[in-house]
Image (cartoon, rainbow, N blue to C red; front, top):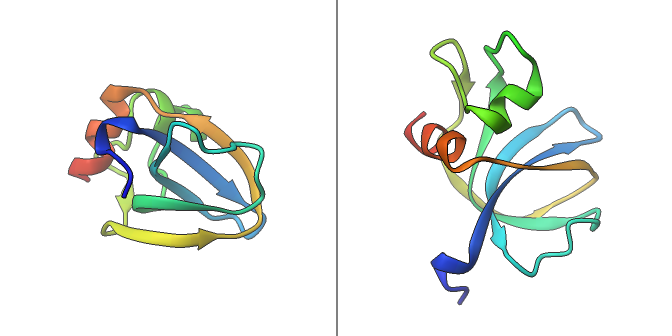
Length: 95
């Protein structure tokens, strides 16, 4: 089991237009085309005024629609990986 203190929050996009935020181990290969996410949430509707990167910098807004959390054992067809700030991750968890 991975130590929760050694997990980092990231935002992932997929070929299928999925946008997910979740936790990965610090040693995760971020160039991988598949990976597992812990405590993942899907952005159903961004609700931002500054695009996708706003979800990484400051987190979901009051207009965002975010799914319930779930672990994703394998997320396929990853196209991009972004770091999420601690402030933004706190908002993702509260959404």
